[in-house]
Amino acid sequence: MEQTQASIRRRKPQPKPKWPKVLIASIVLIILAIWIIVGYAYINNTYEIDLVLNGDSEIVLEFGETYSEPGATAVSYGTHVNKKHQPCDVQIKGTVDATKLGSYTIEYRAVCGEITKTMKRTVTVVDTVPPQITLVSDPEHFTFPNQAYEEEGFSATDNYDGDLTAQVSATEKDGKVIYTVSDSSGNEVTIERQIRYDDPVAPELTLKGNTSVTITEGNKWTDPGYTASDNVDGDLTSQVTVSGKVDYQKPGTYK
Image (tube, rainbow, N blue to C red; front, side, top):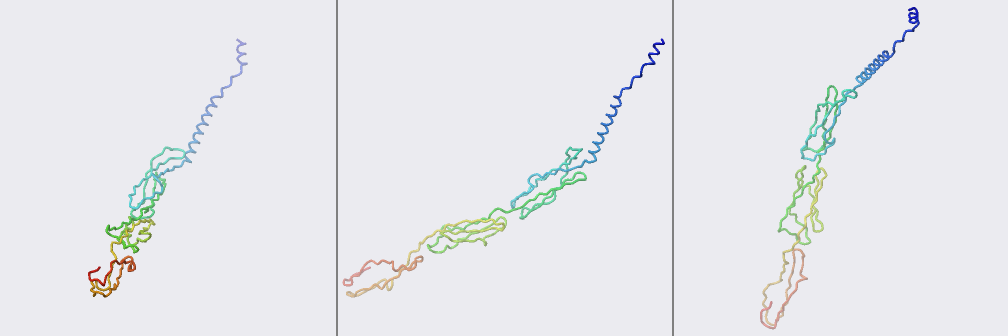
């Protein structure tokens, strides 16, 4: 009994394990780190808007066409938290008058809470269509050779400027008439008319003196002469040919 008690007194107490403290400290550090990360994320988090135009930012519209607004879409998101995209309302400001040439600005404003973002689109109304020239043609009309063409008529219209007939220039060259006109946008058109030359009018032959002459047998007859002229060729007297003869010593009728 004495030995057993002595043995017990001589035994050293066992040390307590340290792992619970280490585990608790680790958990505390992890929680603290999470709080620091979360706090940093919230403190430094910002909200942004992604605004995207439907279609091109610059649109060219032909005069007279109808402008159809393509619109825009917008979403908001956080840079660190709340990263899920949320739709935003988009307000559109500005109009396009396709009946007037020029540039128009359409503004898009996205609103999400207290943040906004704007973008702009430029719509340019242009006139690229050239004028039209219409020629008046008479199927019986002709021009005498070597003479100037007598205008049959024409008209010119433009989709933007309207009547341009007074601004048409007509130039006669190499048997053609060349018509040219430009509108206020610089669009030009040129067409040609082929001149139809003809000369249905015969020359005029004029005899000098009477067409019927009576002479006495034995008296020699002398031709009093003639002239010939043409509406195109002018004097043709030298080109007149004369046939027939008069036998003044023999009575009779001669041509």
